Length: 142
Image (cartoon, rainbow, N blue to C red; front, side, top):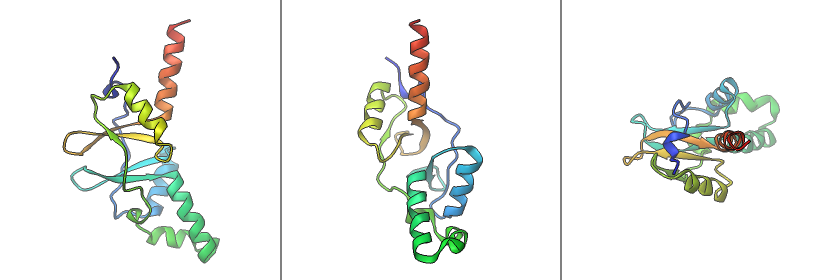
């Protein structure tokens, strides 16, 4: 049985809840990612900022204040105001099948966050990780 710890990404780009949406925008653009785990100073998981939440807030700001004020408001808006606070997590020893089922069942989240027994973030699985796994398994069967 394959486990989450065999496939998860452990080099993560995270933010603090007090960071701004402008900070999140820069991280997503620079690293070509769509999900940013939000952690406290001890690394405990607080939530998830995804591209979906970012775009929803950016459109709200644009509608309310105009596109010419977007960067100003992104620089003033804290991630904690827009992030998902309730997130699905698994442990490193969860089976990949169970993690995949969690990912499929919770389409809003778009990834599965991996935490230890103290809720400290240790990794993440995305749909792209499962696509890579599927390709590897298909190649092995050819």
